[in-house]
Length: 290
Image 1 (cartoon, rainbow, N blue to C red):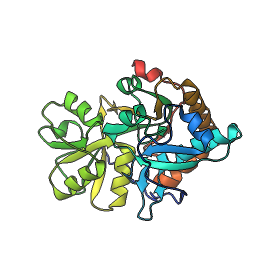
Image 2 (image 1 turned 180 degrees about the vertical axis):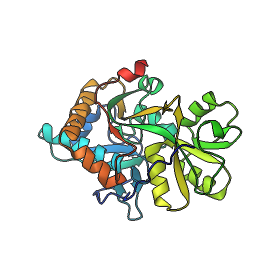
Image 3 (image 1 turned 135 degrees about the horizontal axis):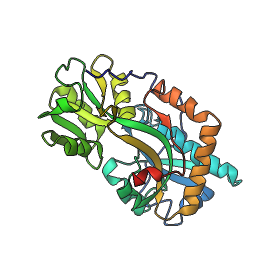
């Protein structure tokens, strides 16, 4: 049996962001590019609202999580480097299936939302990053005894979100698995809690957040194939296709984030450890050729 991944704690970032609002449709970028929005002083950033430790809208309306903090760092660093005033950030919820559309329609200026870089997505949008690397894993109930690894999902009901790639990767490797897709990860978690599905799969970072939010209810299992992680997931910051200047600015900000040690601090603050996270190499997308 595979060992459980160490649960992470201390999920909620203490960062409280001012001016957190729901962005109106198409209000900030208007096709002028991310840098123009930052210079103008109003930036719409897409993230998740239901992922503890990564992107979470708190009861008081503030935002917290690693992706939230990284997006804020990138935007403010770019403004500072150009001598612009720190802009106001409006947050927009960006479900997995809507991310490319929201960028293409100009409804957000950039997205940091556990946004794995892959070949298909890179044909529709640009990516700054990757800023971190994680791996696909499984979330099961604490008392689960039949599921221990990829092969033991044979015939089981597996959940992930619409527009996300992890469940489909499992389906390709194990055709007998029964896929159940929901709009949000939190819906998958509730279905797992109620016993309507057998397991949930996505990135280890996301699953560890949910596991730590409900102590004693769930456990996270590694997924391996031939002794290696089942997948490598490279998180990036999405922005409009062919916005080369904006992409370069994001990568420069992410380089500074890593070089300064601030990335490690943010991982510790939001996830309580780095067991499921490795730093990425901003600007290096060579993994897309593998």
